[in-house]
Length: 268
Length: 257
Image (cartoon, rainbow over all chains, first blue to last red; front, top):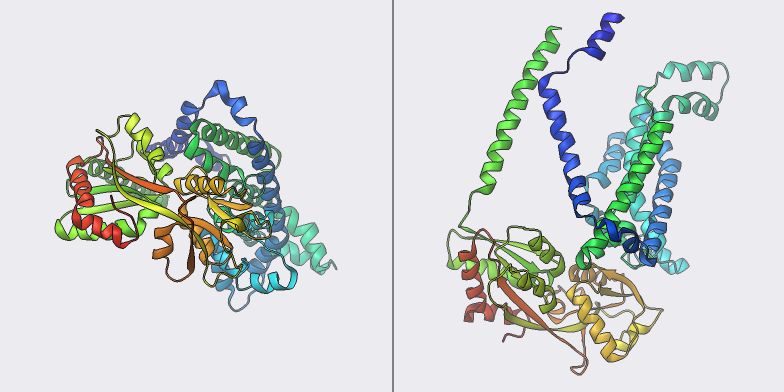
């Protein structure tokens, strides 16, 4: 036990590892330094105190939390099915889940437009039956953001479910617990940290989503303009505003990630 | 134990190879490729500049023209941030101004083409858009380019000249994405360049904007003095201004000076 600990915990890490790890850290640090160096600190408050920024902030918050909620409600069951049920075409479904990760977001947005737009394969009958137009509305934003971010939740939860010892579930079932009770009382507590990690990843991807949103939902301040879209528009006119907005996004993301990490993601 | 030792050795080899590769790649990047000309051109020039590229390359074997297409304002920001660009062709004098003021180009830019605007509607004009007045209709799905890109700035000028307050549903980041949404039938109408309507493949129809309210979009071009290949850049600009180059532009619906 102690030898084991010495080998894993206190031995000197290989030099190559330290060097490569340092390269990785620098790689993430450099853009942040660039952003901080360009930040107009003295005008920061006045640059961010505008209706457009407030609208974008609220919309981004709504859309990203909606994406996490929808992803959890339908993504966890899908992850469970993928991990536990052996069915024909499972590899195909798993590939389908990866689709939004591989696709450039702009292409994903165009694909959503062709499927769910007013003239889309599904969107046209929907429009004719209900008059509902999904693009250019907050629904469009939520759909685009969810499409791009849900895979993170499914992949994380499926991986966790595969690592759970199914004998615990079997034992609970043999004692008379129903399928839902087993999931809620046995499986869920065991995958809890991974589920939380998956939700955080999903949220992080959702808050930064740009390509699919602008392609499917368009860009209108106060209606469909999320923070990343506001940054993009500002980048072309007022670089100070763009930098201030980017810093705001970094600050929000850091605050949420650090807070959640301390709360739920603390390694056991 | 033996296994982990082996892996560690492999790791060292892999990391050494990675470092050498990285060094080689960074050396390769800085070598000046005099046979490569990098052109940043406005989205609305996409088709015309693709034709100019192939014509120029046919005349100059061994030369590789690399096109970087995007919103004029975005391309300008890239140049102001030091992107290696030899020629900048923008869709308005306004977007070109910071390049000249900042000393990124020698002398004044050359106006190489003019374009006008047109209303674009999906094929068949399902919403029966007749003219600019329809842009004020809340019932229709209307898209313009964002006011920060030239096609949006021009579109807003046209709107104010026509005295119409547009009921906008989306401000698109560039003219190509606006056209995509019109072609898909997701927008009922938008304002684009006349040249876009001509080059669009059947998915869009154009409606003319009366001359009294239309604007003349100026297309300036400039050689970027800090670019890696200014000689090549000048040669390309000369070609654009030559009879052959101007003929190609006219073929795409541009008005040539």
